[in-house]
Length: 165
Image (cartoon, rainbow, N blue to C red; front, top):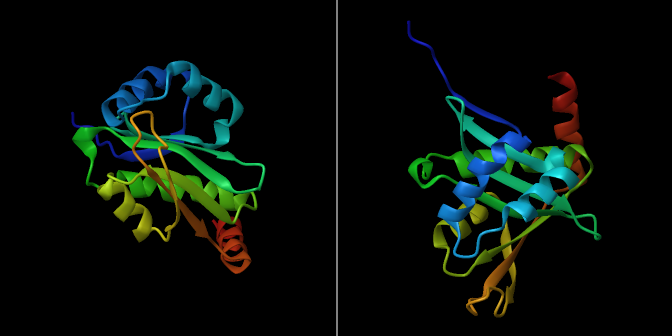
């Protein structure tokens, strides 16, 4: 008997944290601890998403709403074995859609200046470099602050589509 499986984006659960921490550790020089990730999951469950393939978590994204009412992408990572397949874009589009549905039209994130793959993905999604954050990382590496603005018109179109679906 063959079973089919596919890619699913859903809210993260506490049971996903072990795998999320594993992906985080394989993805970043300075990974977030399980305590930080657990706190983010508890505070922002609607903006903490995972991507599953055949029941296995292969990536995640977490966003928060900052004091300036912008959606701040805190972390996104895809298991190295699944990179280059569009999973990062899928996660970004999914979390942005949730944020837009809640009235957020400005998104921001920080990315290491040496992370060319991520920078190119963010640019392809409409993000622009607006500032260099000097010595952002513990080793002194700089980061880019990248921002994406969407219009109220885009927001209204998406809400109408969500209503129809």
